[in-house]
Image (cartoon, rainbow, N blue to C red; front, top):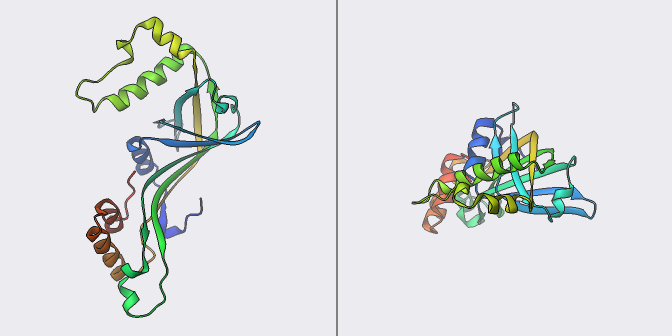
Length: 208
């Protein structure tokens, strides 16, 4: 990912928090049949330092299940939106403005491990379930299902683990524009009902 310095977010704690808040990740890797992408939820473990490890699972029939030992790229994307030149206050001063697109993205690179140990799979499935069920009024737990049924389901999946070797975030929110343009972009986005994007332009902080 091309990341000019004014858009860079490289603080590991900030990136880890954003990944924890994110729902779905895009996993990309090479298979025997070429590049493939899968869309899956993932957990982030802080170890090993400095970047941690991504953990999740896939259907055993997914071609990604054969990508063990290969390099992988994982992508999370946050809010994004078109920025019209008409939003720039400096447009009134000269015509030297062009459209752009504001967005938030995180990229993680690492070598993927694929595993099928039942106990390890159960741990991953349980942790993922607990992570996403905790906001429910009556959270469902893996242990609510019959144990033999759970074991049958586990036989249909494989786990993945990706120790992160490189982690980068990009928050492209008009930071390269003069302050007067950032304020006018924020105001224009709010007027258009895009309050989430406007807040990111105002703060420059990452949010997924």
